[in-house]
Length: 84
Picture (cartoon, rainbow, N blue to C red):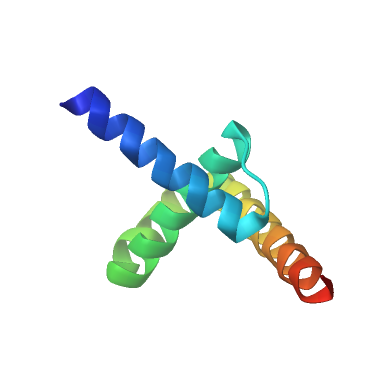
């Protein structure tokens, strides 16, 4: 049961990454997974996100870069769709 669920969840992440960014690779999927988790936590439990940011400033910078990259890729994907 777990293997089947994991495969289905991986498929969901793959499709979400493709729809969000216009492409899907294992590296992009990992970035989208981290971004989605962090975004959810920062909205649902801001004190936890703040604590994590303070505990791990280097990880906070990495997350900021991931968020920026995803935003840029999403913007480029939307612009490309609007041109076509």
